[in-house]
Length: 147
Image: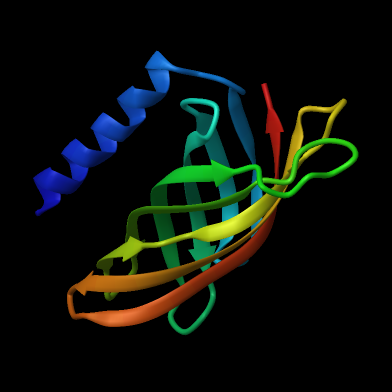
């Protein structure tokens, strides 16, 4: 199982090398969990995001996730862009009681027209698979700067 997750993670990251539309965004996510966030565009509507964050809910832990995201530009705004997005990915929880789960994030982002900054709001239901099956939830508000 561990080798499969590593292979999926490496394959996902390698996709970002071939088709880069908007570059790499790095920033922070505030919520549950709180930490560092990154997003790499792989096409006009697709991106990979990842975070390394800490959780203070219950037992303190380190949370690492990576997701593949699909964006929809159905909402028209006067300036910038306001895409809705959803995706699927994985989460690893590092603590005294470690775990692995599947995330299904969805949210919205705002891309400013004249500055390389993205604001985002996200909710991600999680199905923990190891060490036991359980349902969890992440949510956060964040900002990323694009290079």
